[in-house]
Amino acid sequence: MQELERGDSGIRSMASVQGSLVMYPIYKYGNEEQRRKYLPKLGSGEFIGCFGLTEPDHGSNPNGMITNIKDDGDAYILNGAKMWITNSPVADIAVVWAKDEEGIIRGMIVEKDMKGFSAPEIHGKWSLRASVTGELVFEDVRVPKANMLPNIQGLKGPLGCLSKARYGIAWGAVGAALDCYDSALRYSKEREQFGKKLGQFQLTQKKLAEMITEITKAQLLSWRLGTLANSGKATPAQISMAKRNNVAMALEVAREARQMHGGMGITGEYPIT
Image 1 (cartoon, rainbow, N blue to C red):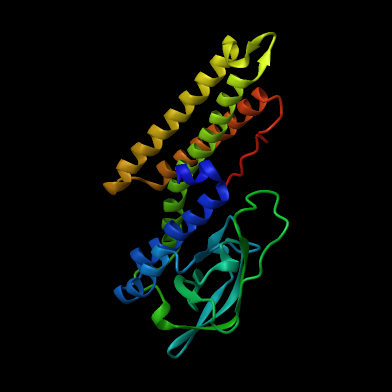
Image 2: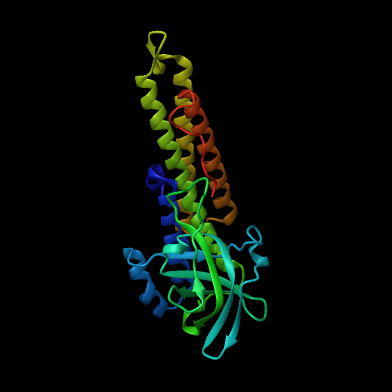
């Protein structure tokens, strides 16, 4: 995720969704038949997936979702809509979260060719333009019960996926900061002022030293978080803390790099996902 975001945040976003928000819930919450059917194709890139949680009126409150399913024999009838969904216009499958008739949040795998399912693209975004974003619209979509994720109920399911994605974002922010730092460092070796390279001024050296120090600290934070995650000890609060810290660090590095460039070359803007 660090190296992907070093190239473009949109590419990292697509990879984060594919791994953390689509493959992970199928692996963690699905059955063996679902794993064998979807994971190999998702892992190879033959299938692209998306994650349907955010809704037009309930972005920061997933528990308020109105997307719902009703029992219909060997299938569920799915109705509702999701908004700001990465990969949705190009996705072959969607891991969708909806409330059943008892108000319990359930996860299911919806395939793109299911009748009543559409994924219109969102145009004119101000950032992350390399990341394809759209909606998910469900109009009486008949989803076979075999597509229901059997090993999870409640908000714990989607929130567990988001923790996985936030860990990837924590690393991605480091990559964005590294690219800004590398750009500023190269520029300091090329640009001359008052007969000297910018990098020969002590204030410039101080700024570069502070930038790479903060980047290295963020890398160590993410690395430590990874060791905790591998042993099953990482908490959602720790993951959110790492994401918050590293995104703030990347913003500050981008601002310093932009100042060093005199406003040229680097926008200084970092999209917070």
